[in-house]
Length: 136
Image (cartoon, rainbow, N blue to C red; front, side, top):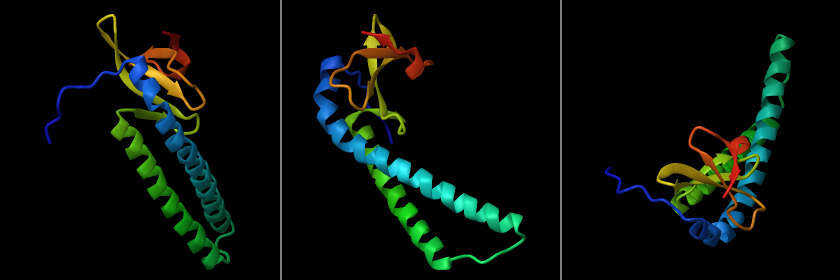
């Protein structure tokens, strides 16, 4: 599939997307957090059985948690797709970070938004992350 020219955003364009980003990112972060908790619990159960050389598994509980993890995975995929469709690049679901391509002094960089921010105030280079954010 052939892509068109790369879209670069202005801070004002990203600011206009913040209400939709907020609507998507809050539930996406919640789903990501719950999925991480379930994966950890399933791994602990596997480790417990392996260390014990076998054991009794509550199969119904295991199936229930596995089904919930599958549901959460679909929710996460849909949330990520919604952000990508807006033109953003989700970077950290735990922190609620999204980057948008931007041209700054003829250099390609990223505008950086974090859940809770009401306007775009930061950018960073392509090889930098959240820690490298600089004020616009």
